[in-house]
Amino acid sequence: MRVLRGVVLRLLFHESEVPIDLSWLETTPMTTLKWIDLRCPVCESVFESMAASSNDEAGHDYTIDPGTPMSMAVAMLPFLVHVCRRCGYTGAVSDFGDDVEITNDVRARVWAELAPQLGTSVRIPWLALTVAGSDKYDGAARIAEWRGGDARHVAELWVRAAWCCVDEDDVEAERYYARHAARWFAKALDVYGEFDDDERTTMAYRLGELWLRIGDTRQANAWFERAGRSS
Image (cartoon, rainbow, N blue to C red; front, side):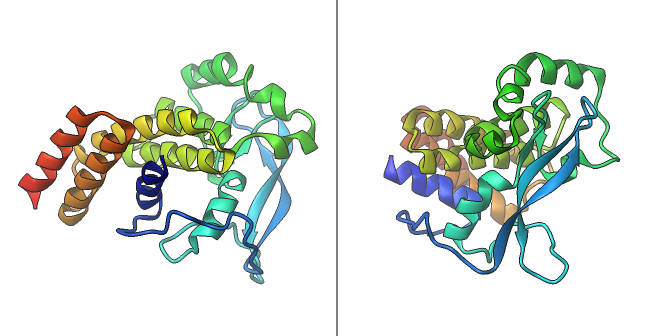
């Protein structure tokens, strides 16, 4: 599974080579955690959530980009998504904006599928800190799917769920989320404009690696062949 985790890392950080052994407890003066107020677009509740932010004068929200140290990014992943403690609606800060529109179908699915699982687990503010990052990204990925988000964005949420499982030491859940990520990256590759030509070849090869490590050699061979044809 260490090799599978290395592939998941490359998908998350868009790097060709990354170290597999990381220090999860590395600290940095560049980020901090703070309580923020959010308004849920599903149930209209206002609640507090712990969020990662940059230690700059403007206090900007923390973001992951290719220049972010990997150990720092992984440690911050659970604090980049937030859960409404009433209905279980989950997403990034932008998903709680005033301009976010939720259809009746999505609202019904949040109440039916996420409220019983996520909503009850965070109704006491300090307990919100104990919600697994993988559970948060699971909810965020589902909502992104229900809202018709682009395939690449949905895939990256599933990748983040898989990577959170590494820190949580949950191998089976990591494999489960990796499958979801692979399927959604495959959908993204079939959509014009989500990847440029160079990215398509690289991503096809990485998907081959990912399926191979998951244990599906048929899928792996198909993606390796696709990468060869497009190179």
